[in-house]
Length: 183
Image (cartoon, rainbow, N blue to C red; front, top):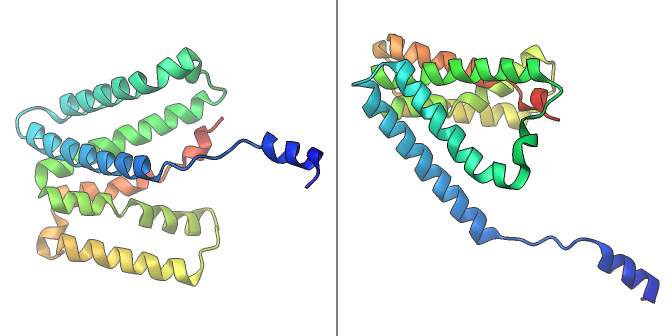
């Protein structure tokens, strides 16, 4: 290898893998989401849904600000797509409201299982509304995933109660693309 090529190779930034740290972050996020859902279910039994929604949003905002603002400052709030951000905020607000309604009216496990079906509905909507191509393997994965949701939720006559219907409505709101707000 010549001296020039060794300089070029050394000029490339080295990618550092932090697999154990990534695993720790994933485990921590899973615990935080589980605790958040359990606390929300507990709180909606005593407080109005709007109050619990406001508190969840405020805590999430302050937590993110604690990690993001020291590195980026207030420039992180600058955008050229204000309309898209407002639409996404309204969409997420509706989604969280439906989640809290479901928590108040049905078991936590059922509401959470339906919540995990959001990517299934997002894929279905992208195929039907955006005309994206979805291969056979992905359709099969969607069917298996939906089957898993059905196993956990054990649908029957109780599946058509208000709590379940409000939770099933949520995936249409979470399907809003974050790419619309990117930039």
